[in-house]
Amino acid sequence: MSARPRAAFVPLPMLLLLVGLASAPLWLTRVGLYQYLALEIMIWMLFALGYNLLLGYGGLPSFGHGAFFGIGAYAFGLLQLRLWPNLWFDLIGAAVIAAAFGAVVAAFISHRRGIYYALLTIAFGQVFWFVAIKWHSVTGGEDGLLNIKRLRADFGYASFDLASNQALYYFAFGIFTLAVFALWRLVHSPFGRILTAIKQNEMRAAFVGHDVWLYKWIAFTLSAAVAGVAGALFAMAQQSAYPNVMSLHSSGFVVMMVLIGGGLVSFWGPVLGALFFILARDLLGAYTETWLLWYGLLFMAMVLWQPEGIAGAWQAWRRTHRPAAPALAASKAA
Amino acid sequence: MPLFEAKHLHKRFGDAVVLEDISLSFDEGRLSGIMGPNGAGKTTCFNVLTGRYKPDRGEVRFDDRVITGATPRAIARLGISRSFQVMNLFNDYTALDNIMVALPAVRRRGFDAWSDLASDSSAQDEAAGVLTRVGLAGRERIPAKSLPYGERRALEIAVALAAQPRLLFLDEPTAGLGTEGTARLSALIAELKRTLTIVVIEHDMHFLFGLADRISVIHWGQVIAEGTPDELRADPWVRRSNLGALEQ
Image (cartoon, rainbow over all chains, first blue to last red; front, side):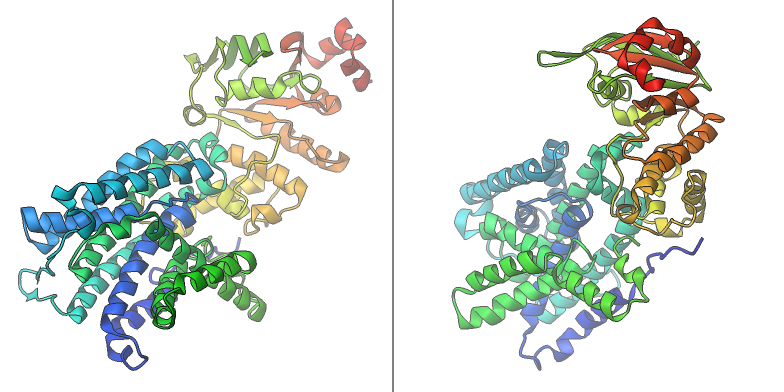
């Protein structure tokens, strides 16, 4: 039997992505971009990658995931302002709190799939969004939490000031690198492979003895935790946390990123999608207030003619130009 | 003592009584057949026996243990495996991956979130062995959805075999197969029969009479006749009914 393609420990796209991101501060002003934009793109990439564990690998559509991004942002702010302004404590706290909320929601929805699953996630997302707006004494209502600090990153032997966009960018880059690597391992591990088997055929998975509910629950909780970390970084980037990121349309952004990028066929789809989305927002947004209209039309065209997204188009192109590389077609399966 | 026993099963959906006081038992090391006309309740019976539906009344025992109403997952873990009449595969996965994710060794490592399953050569070898057993050697890398129908049927059984069952339920394994495919499947099941306890639902009489040690005939949600193929051939009810006529 021929050897099966195995997932490289550090695959080429990951290397390219990390090198690209690490060097971005050196060249981005030359292509007309700016440091803060790169920071925001990376944060959304992180959010989208975590979300794709659920949508792409688990086949579980959550349309309320902005809630966990927002919970991460609020948690980071509240921990910092009210408990202990320590970067590590607040960051890990944000991840744990977002995961905890995710775990509770997942417990209510993991026996479902498809449209019922999606509707329940919308309902829960709206509940969190509403609470964020109405619970003034804690969340600051519609104004949100202001004066969230970019705390110093203390490594014991050295400590870094993250006040500048570039410093915060490199800090976020470190976290992003760890998360990408961990997610890459996860989706190729027995856990990830069984999760995708459940996506393909939940009933058969149960009949070969898998605890389908538990896998779905874990996938949701993990992706909520990643969303929480992304939200915490976003709170630092914006130096505030506000309810807008928890709204339904904001939850829709991450779905559009993942689908346009091609998260259903590639691990790297969400990365492409987040890059594309934020760039489109910035570039189209510079010309017209109604950029979302154009983006929405683009999204519809994509769903109609290229439902596998940018990564899918790339894979199709590679297949026709390099017929000797079927391993690429199966790269998601590898 | 039989390996698997069902006593007085009742199952209804709304007003329709699908199973009415069915009792069945399957001995270890035997191939037992369940036959009956379409709509007789065979598949419902199977679904109750393998945990997909809960019976309204009655008891199911496996290896002297009551498993009535247990979940499919729990039943699978006890060593009961099943195939499906309508193909039920992991379509996007290769044939090998279909088997890999069904192996108990992989299941036990299900919450291992770090190692790479594709580099796990012992699981791969085991999975390749299962494929060889059902005649799919050389097809490891082909996605399940791209396999021809007959091979998908074989893979359907292979996924059930991957769980290393003590008892294997096959739901209409010949469904949709031509004469040649049925003959090949017959040979495969005869081979499996040497090492496994098997229960087969079929309406292909010829197929079942050639393989089964014992057959139960289900009609109108009840067991109307039971015995060896020879006994059933002599049974006046079976002879009178369509079932017997088909067999001649």
